[in-house]
Amino acid sequence: EVQLLESGGGLVQPGGSLRLSCAASGFPLRSYAMSWVRQAPGKGLEWLSTISGSGGSTWYADSVKGRFTISRDNSKNTLYLQMNSLRAEDTAVYYCAKGDFWSGIDYWGQGTLVTVSS
Amino acid sequence: QSALTQPASVSGSPGQTITISCTGTSSDVGGYNYVFWFQQHPGKAPKLMIYEVSNRPSGVSNRFSGSKSGNTASLTISGLQAEDEADYYCSSYTSSSTPYVFGTGTKVTVL
Image (cartoon, rainbow over the protein chains, first blue to last red):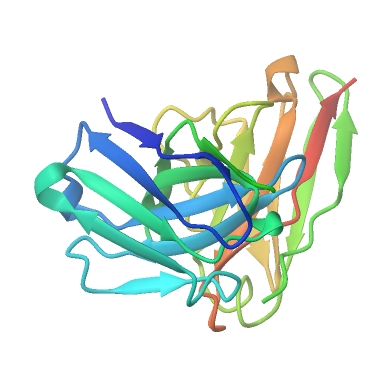
């Protein structure tokens, strides 16, 4: 059974940093691209970033390019999202997801809430 | 890259057929078959319902079908059931600097 478990969310001040983690199980992580998607309270889905199975290729939304960094450690079956220079508008539930924009995102984690506020 | 355009809401009675549209441009929906549809119930993670325009993942009811014409993709739900009440999002690969975009979302209400 595919499972994705996010952690690392919480309250952070504007300008601060946070690193999200996603523990993956039930499939060979190294064989799949992985993505992060967020959803602000009461709003729609926003794709943030995708990383290839090897980690050699990454893609970012313009809204987070230069502030967020996606990475993975296949030996630890873990996906990461380093978030810097956080703004109030980054407040959202952040989802870890298996797949990309070509193969489709077929599994999602339960999400972790990030709140950016002073 | 702007979000793909979906109607804010669609409703229907049990047993009816409804269609949700997803309008983009030739740089996304119209130019590629990497169009996907997701269902999201309140407080839950999204679920993939359709991939590559018209394919259903294993386990998804055949009451759900997808299609595309020009720059507009569509999700059709036939034999509408109470459990279909949810938010639905389309998404597409794009050739812009942001390679993936979601639609604005459609709330489906079963009357």
